[in-house]
Length: 261
Image (cartoon, rainbow, N blue to C red; front, side, top):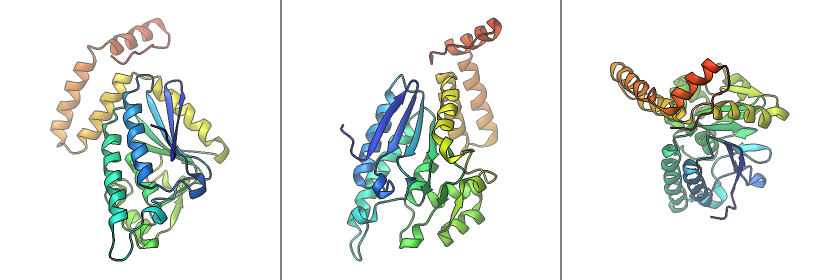
């Protein structure tokens, strides 16, 4: 597929997926979702890719849905429903990716942009990036999960503050609340995120897949069942090549060369 709204870049085992509509602050339309769905499916199946970094070109991560292209009009919600159907298909493909997906927020991140970031495994950002919900500022409603995911991370009080007021908060202030994992100086955001991605990519691909599966699946399990699942997964992983290679590398005082099996 030839992309018009996004861009994919490979840097060794790290693949960058960029929203690429900088003149529109990377606002997303139905076509963006179609392209993202294809990109997530392709990167998920690409053996060389071990980590996906998701960001936006230009001055911002994403300002949300493109209301000019896909906004509803009074009595006609067809355009926004078309967008939401495409977004749902994209989200299904994103969640099928077994590799780490990290949101790299480099500027404004609002509404659907925040929802996209929340779909990723975690968020890193420029210290000065501004993050908020903002749906109600323009008479819109969340349809990508912010009313569900955001309060589970920052608590209902902060989530309601952001959603009711439509204000933004600086990424640095959101680190203590658990929404942002790491922040960088603005001019160092991409380099800092790349360094982190390389650290992650150096780990066992099989181990990364297993840990992601355990965390995502364990969140909805009763504690005893989740602990049992973890023990079973750990036992199975210990029979793998990567587990043996890790032990060999430790004994030989060298960096392991994992193969993901």
